[in-house]
Image (cartoon, rainbow, N blue to C red; front, side, top):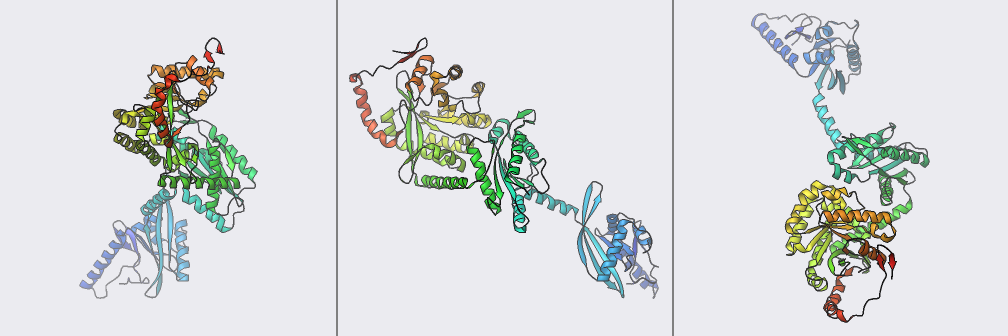
Length: 614
């Protein structure tokens, strides 16, 4: 199908609801019905091209537009009749001129091109996939161009990309982005010296538990904003997990320069945060590694910065330290402990020890606290400080607690023979466990299965009560129904206050040994102790003093307080299960012959009025 005159291709333009023919209209050679058929076909073709959602244009070798449909005119923001009426020498708009130049260049080179074009439409940006294809019709070279609107598809792709690579809360790039950026620096050979800082927000869990996750999230947004201030375009800040960030500083001149900047960040974070009417304080522990001194790969640098950060965590938090080789040795030693801990759980190489709680007036045993101990490969007993925190961190503490309960029940007869059948048995539960309803429900079921749940007391630290909605509202009622007692362990060193006791539902409060040590010499601690004692008494809680190691400490408690119960090395060291048999066999005989024992050596007694004397 051809048009008459000098144009072998029909040239169409928008004209109301129809496409107008720019060249002279085709005349039918045969006239009559055949002419009407040709005219009908041409009208149908015109209407189809006009209504296509894809922009379609045809240009000649001078760049002049021969055909423009509605979609193309809308994309170019130029009326079709203006495009069709313009000559190749007439003044043209920037967009029209660009299309002419592209047409002439592609037709001369006789090559097809597919490209993405962005067009700003007010506040919106639209993206088109434009294909230019040279064609030859009746020995005339033309450029056929089609433009499909990909804006919605691109928006979906951009959203998927953002979700995959950028943190939804803070808008910061995620782990894989900073990893790729660092690797590109390393592989391009452009990196001469840069720093990688690993930042962890201190005590963020407590903030989340006390104020709620919404406040915690808002705090993270503010922290990210402060960390991102004053960064150069070549630097990158990334949020790699809940409260952990990575900061890449590139380039750097010296370690001193980085140290000065990191200290500036620490000071910036110490300023109070005002979130939803609450004044919050935060700090960060930061570990720093330098390229190339501390590693020549991203993973080595990240790992070493992580190791340095944990050194800060272990030494008090809220500071920064650079990686050194000694930290790597410590990390390897920690990995060995971790490995041995996992194997010990598999091999059940944990043993149980018991420390009695005494009535300091009668010296009778009120209850016992079950303590877990680890035997290493050589059979040496390891104190809990070497593995408990690691077990909590690795998520192994749940299994360990269940193992402890199983060991207690395995030796319940020996326990009864040694300490008495009515003696209460306390088991420590970490704050992380106490806030986990799934674990606590399974542990409650295990205690119920013992057949004597009323003998057990769960000891939790103050931290567990900070998350009141979890522990007090959801978990505590389960244990109350079983008759299991609740004890607040290590009171005084956590995040509670005396007023917080009023909101805590517990049977027993254990005052941390930091208050008890040399209590007879410390008037301020004496005042605090009396306040805790009075408030606990008013709330119906039994008070137990932990860590009694000297007679002077005991004498003060007897003479100056109403505290009845205590535990510590002064009374008894922890007693291991294998020792219970011998103790059980001698217990009855010991009680039977107690009347024939010689009187104990007289010791000085503390008097409120006179102090120590004979």
